[in-house]
View 1 (cartoon, rainbow, N blue to C red):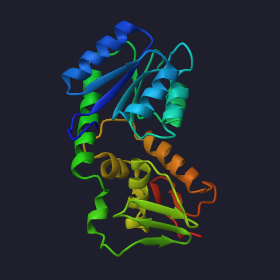
View 2 (view 1 turned 180 degrees about the horizontal axis):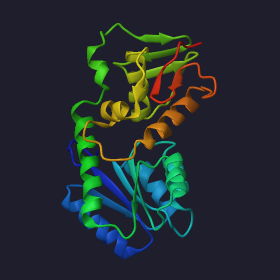
View 3 (view 1 turned 45 degrees about the vertical axis):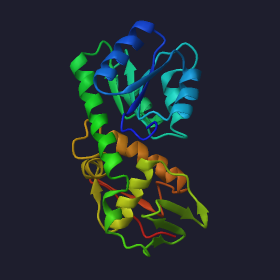
Amino acid sequence: MPGTTATPRALVVDDAAENRMLVSALLIQQGFQVDQAADGEAAVVAAEKLSPDLIVLDIGLPDIDGVEVCRRVRSFSDAHVLMLTAQDTELDKVVGFEAGADDYVTKPFSVAELVGRVKAVLRRASRTATAPAATFAATTTPDTTRAFGTLTIDPLAREVTLEGKTLDLTRIEFDLLDTFTAEPRVAFSRAQLLERVWGPNWFGDDHLVDVHVSNLRRKLADDPRSPDFVCTVRGVGYRMGAGR
């Protein structure tokens, strides 16, 4: 967030000016500082420069589509990405979630529906500002790090190393790993992970847990078919493995 204020920042991406103005007006009413972009390339540049907390992203853009924008933005940002789409099929949602989207709103959407999702983002932003570390970091003693084979987690410094090399994790990826490693024998359901990492009032699809776990595994070089670190517990969710 800019400066020392707690004002959340949003980026609205749509090639239709009337849509950008409508969404921007709603976000301003909800307390956001709003920037706009009319195409995908400009959106990626703006997201990297401005570090928004929320990106409202139309999927049908004139240059690169919203899915590709989301995929690029996810390489450097953990902003909440809310996609706007004219389609409402399961395949469209899966593709968007795999690219890193957090939620979907189908056009034409109601004001109440969009505001409901925006309020969820505000709750998450407020929680992050008051407690930036994960839930279990506060109970960790200053000289305690967690080691799982070649993987080391320092909760207080929010640093992770693998084979001696520092990993560049997003806030959500770190908080997931922090949750897993704090209680390595606990199998967490997706609902429990949503509550611990995204907050108890999160409003969204629990499939996004799978997306962020997949991204985390990729950075850990963890094969999901035979994982060394983050294990899938069938019918439940995920837990920490034994490590290499």
